[in-house]
Length: 431
Image (cartoon, rainbow, N blue to C red; front, side, top):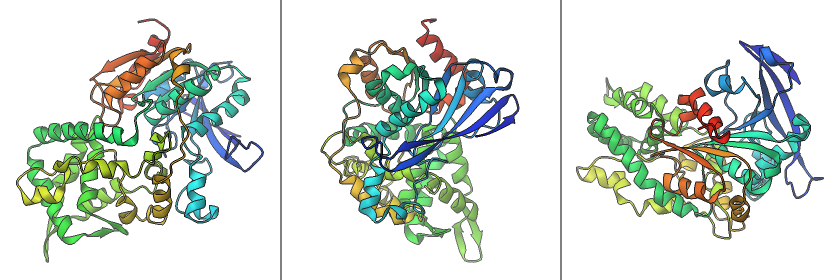
């Protein structure tokens, strides 16, 4: 273990060994990394633990540079574990460079089938007694981390003293088709709101899309396509996303000796926004997080998109309608245009056609829940359907919700201490 200091904090890097397959505890082992964080003034005290589960899937825990945002509030009373979920960050990474060590696409897909919320929770239950001496801990789950928290309540509630969820109440029974059938109208509302805020972007988006359709440029090996440009709509789910998207587009074109071209600045920004190099599991496992039965997810976002022809950029260009952005959806073309994903195309295909997913949630156990739970539900969250979230909230005994339109999906980051304060007050019956 390495311990070191940031302003106001003491950090300790911890590594844990866990089974790849928890049904075979004596089999292959992998490593999971967690960063312990405690207030410097309380480093020697016995404090309750809070484990933070990041959104995703596929993202390691946020790297803080001090007692900022919600972390500053948490360390006032908790010893915090920032967990890199398996395959992310410093936890035995899974990406185009490491996965060939497993073998071919079939072996890679079988390996990655162990990287869903059920395995993440079992990792937590192996780690918890090593840190707490067996005492239960509080879980803070953001987005996909909230999905993991609901799985935790379903499978190991004895390990929990409280659960705090921000923008992450999953549907308990929706197939991936249902998730995206609900998602596209939400995304369309976000796009309409963006164009009302920045009406000049309607024509600018059409110009950019037409240029990409004609020229198909490349930036550092990444193919820039109309579909890739549309996918920048993922920004619209964040508190500042509409502004960021506008500023990205406003300097899209530059006049050169060869005529009008897309600027290097724009191409680099688009490539960076579209790249999965830092979080490939987000793309590879995105639809797998919804698999719960024998039905394959089958590239649900791509199939369901056909039910919403207004998202067809080519048709928009032929008419006079706006080009609609898309949001949090993964498509087969992602694995053609992104050099970080191309080697994983067949692996992703095998996961998309997999039909033996285990159920993730125990509705009877959730209905009898005794763990204090509070969830922030963002009123028109672009990433997690509000109606699905509220149905799940009603199905978990004792869960208290804070439904707000003050924040977007990134409320935990944008709202920081206030969001955490509100959730802690709810689980403690203080409001």
